Image 1 (cartoon, helix red, strand yellow):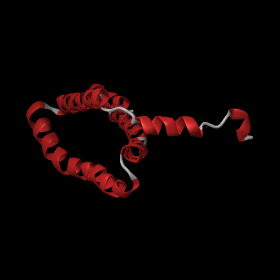
Image 2 (cartoon, rainbow, N blue to C red):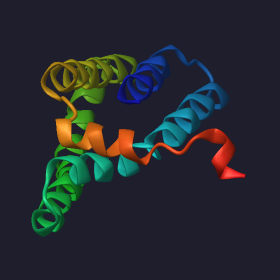
Image 3 (cartoon, rainbow, N blue to C red):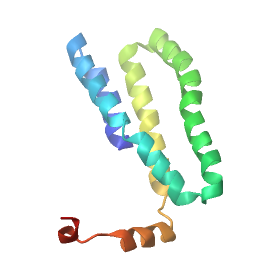
Length: 126
């Protein structure tokens, strides 16, 4: 999911008209909606019930911290290098984050077993 978001962010660099930027940013907004449920699912998989609220707080504070750190970075990059380069740099940072996450994250074994136990055969749902 994160890779799709970075594609949308990076594609913004190639927009030349306000409507095209709107389309790409709209796609980014749609893609971002899946990040929060995925983050909460990750929290459920990795933390026992008594630690989940703290872990969710850390997860949510990351978004707030990003909202504090990124605007000055965007302003600096936009003024010094232009808005298109700003989109490329932010997209590249997102891809670096994606690669780091991809190679370090794994689903805990107990969570995989729980999912296998909860699978409902398709005909039993009707």
